[in-house]
Length: 285
Image 1: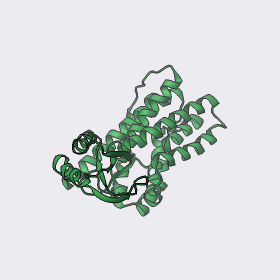
Image 2 (image 1 turned 180 degrees about the vertical axis):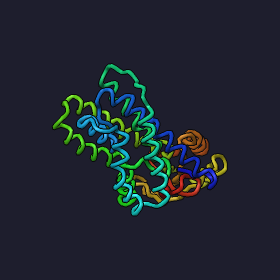
Image 3 (image 1 turned 90 degrees about the vertical axis):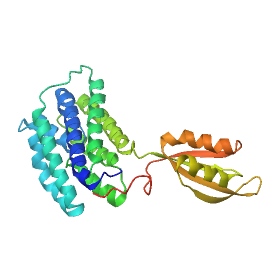
Image 4 (image 1 turned 135 degrees about the vertical axis):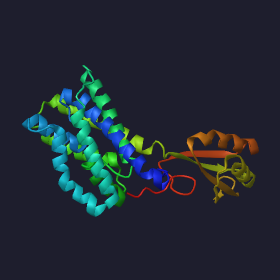
């Protein structure tokens, strides 16, 4: 995530949290709840408590259960993260209470996919900010910072535990539809988190590597790194140019390389994230 200026930081993060919360709750309240599905995360547990007990609304359950979890955010993440997440929980609560319309989808599988896309997209938008919506998001971020465990994976495992409990009192079909919904949600959440950070790493092997490097700097304004390589068949030592570009620059890089050396050998790989000058900065909560 590339940060805005200090003056834009707070409004931008508040906007992401508010937008993501509304998208999340529309998927949960307007799509999932009419079918008695369980969504991902702590709100899924709140829906389950609502279905089973009939007490309170999911939004109120969410606010109550978040109290002990917030202590983890206070002690293990940061005060700033705590404040943003407090706003996130308030946004979730208000959205859950104020959204009274439903999005009528009669096919249950289509409803599960639609709800999963909305809920996952909303979660990803919130997690692109410096806060969260509380619940499993706080636990997920702690695990991500300490052990680089991806947010979607943590949520999916936790949801399986919730579903194992729900099998006791809910219909099997509803649980299976909910599992499909959470799988879609976790995948969409991971995609939203990575969609603006994906880069291409190009390894260029050529006898004209230095000329290609100068041309790349001039035409694409990207630097690179020379690596030493040895051909297995020829035994010749060659310079290997490594260049990192975004998706839009890849075609220009290919044209630049082959305009200098039509016989160049180019390997392009996807990379999840690039941190450093000219790309994203490390995100600190």
